[in-house]
Image (cartoon, rainbow, N blue to C red):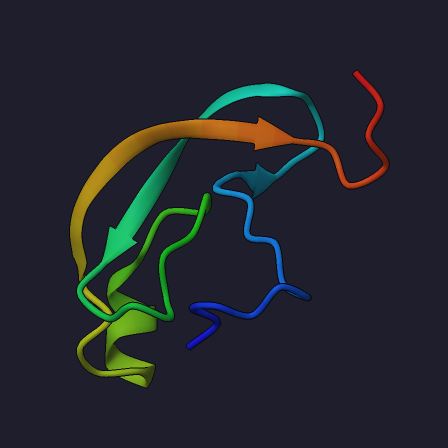
Length: 66
C-alpha cells in the first residue's frame, strides 16, 4: 500500500511500556495480531482472528525513552 511513498516510513516494532523484546500473538487475519493473548471471545466476536502462531519482536516506547 505504501510501496514507493517517500513520505511514509515503516518501523517493524510494537509499542509497549518498556524497550526490548516482546511476544506478539499472530492472528490468522492480518489486522488482528497483538501483544495481548488472542482469546476465544475475540474469535467469537471477530471470526477468523484465531491465533495462528507467535513470534518474538522488537518493542519500543512511543516517547522514545529507554
